[in-house]
Image 1 (cartoon, rainbow, N blue to C red):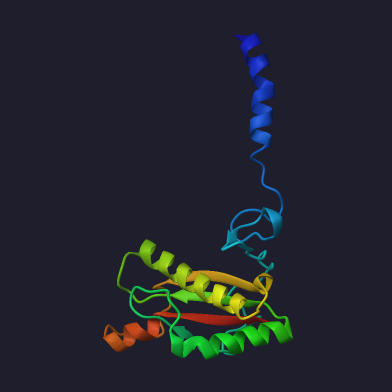
Image 2: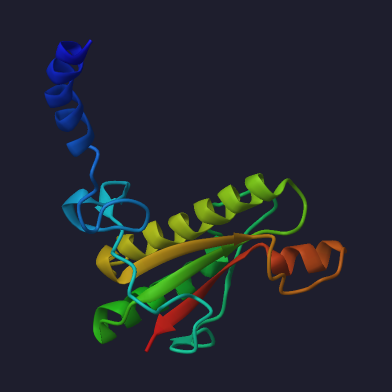
Length: 167
């Protein structure tokens, strides 16, 4: 039995050593070892920076809105996208894109849809020339509604992507 364990030890060491993550890998990690979306690496998260932190200006740009159960950017919001892309190109600041949904759907579904919305906006910004390394995404799903009502107009205000500029 002990010979079996001795023979198994090198295999275990090699197997488990390949599971160690390199710095920058995993969720939110960027660079060669990070997460990729449409072939573009997501940047590393900045230490002490989140969408809700005081060093993020969430009022610089107005939200982009979405139709029910959609993550397609509306034609009327393309101008906002171009404006933000130009800002990222000229100022070089990091922008956090936060995706939101209305309350309809499960929390898991809404979190996923919010992420799809944030990623769709990120891709549109990159298509307009913004550096993917300056664009982070986060999903809040149905958390933090812009309007707590249950009417169609309230739901429409909640289906959005908001922008936070890291100071």
